Length: 350
Image (cartoon, rainbow, N blue to C red):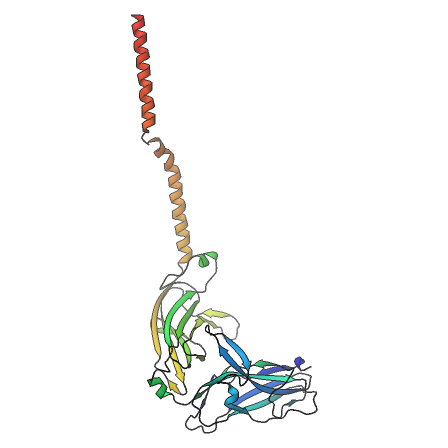
């Protein structure tokens, strides 16, 4: 069966622009590499996406939605028959726009599949297949070039930054999990830098976040998230960890110092159809120090010391407590009884 073969698909660009000056005939190319011992037919299909209020997407058949990729792309015919070989085969699939100019955004997924190829009538176009296996490539978003008019009337707005926060990922002991990080004070070790942002416009934009970590005016590292689509009225979060791979090794190293101040510049960049929005930049400062374990043990020592002193002082202070009214009354009655008995005895002797 074709399932015994291995299928690899190249990732298309996150944004495909139609109508860009100097590019009258743009095309999107998908590279497919197949290896394995079984004959197969390679096919390409479009998949529609719809998003709920939480931003989760659901897959639907092509041409189900108004923004379907099937409405804007056509697949160029190609020889889709895979014949087993030791090195495998590479297929180049070209997608061309049906129109030279569009006035809306299209988005969805590209699904590359392979079936058994047992049919004597091979599908030379490579579109559509039944009972096939395959993989979804990255989401493709098609936008018209230049949306300046919609920017002016407020339908499109760059992503707005909601919050940034920095959390230690160092969990060498249970103490690190019990004691939370304090604002601006981070336990030594790698940290997670996270940014939350939202799109307050009506139309989607493509956003990416970047972080620059520096200490004592020296840049320690720069991190960047991939560009992704953010639909109108939705929010998203992106994060990175301050670790980098050691060259020639699978191990990672923390790029931050073990002690001292660190400045973090967070930049949020939005774009759509070749139009770049003004970036949102926030600069934050944190102080890195190994403070959780020492603080815990100092607090523990103080608690034991207080408890020990309280135990030693408690017996002494209990003897020095003033007697209650009941005790004083009993003592007074006792003295009165003794006096009366003594007086009666003295009268009898006389």
